[in-house]
Image (tube, rainbow, N blue to C red):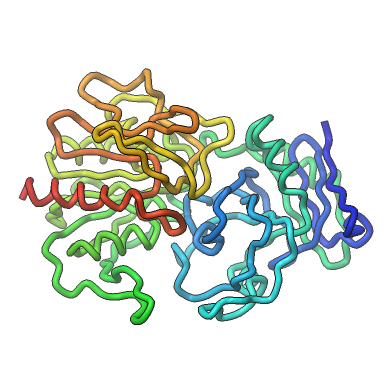
Length: 391
């Protein structure tokens, strides 16, 4: 079934400078934002009301076109601080309202100019409620956003491109967003008066494997007295062990965990067997599960937003979390000796696990927030406590 966007207040189809074409042939007309050109990916939706800049620079969104359900994206402009990576992240964006002039004391300029500086393509004027309904009903579709100021588009060609795109299942994207060389990180949390701080007297050394790591995760570790060495996704266990870490972190990232796990899972198994405290988030959580013998599967629509309720089964407390994932650990595949520690109160999926008797645990969601609530910051301290106990 084909859907086309309509508007009573904007004659979009006559003045369109952009289109979104889905793999099933559905067409949404709108106005282009960012650079001209075409971009392809999996269409998902994000329910966060704030933090669009952080979302667009989250490497976990690689390969995806983000539909923002909050209608006023861009109204606080952009700044140079609220970014999660300097490299590749989301493939494009889909928004309802046109971007207005910036209105925030931290703004450095208009969001559209920032999108152009990062070579991002997007479309405004889309009925994002209708598009979200399609994703919820039929699952995340492939899509192409095309932006051309002359309003001329080869719709049949765009349909063919969207239909032919292979999708995220089976796709290893960690290599595309990971660093290629190791580096040290010292920047700590942001302060309204001072900006970002610096960790100058670290008491612990954490090695973070970069499958698509967010800057705010690194800041959370630095804030807790850690020196962080970030290593590429393809680093061997010997590369990690040579750095003599007090703890190992398995980062978030995009794509299919089974595909990235081809080279990452053997390394993670060695990390677990070493006895060094290990903590995983998002893709790191999924690949830890694979390393332990469990399975992962692609979700119908995924979890993306800063308002997701999760229950900590070890304490009984409920926390509101920030999430961004399209794959999940299969509960029935968890082996003996692995305990489910967190559970989604939206749909009941596994949100955390730990290994009985070992200083190893992981969560599916993003305790660093950015954007999102800070209910889950305690997990970083939980990991540091394990590191200190092991030391």
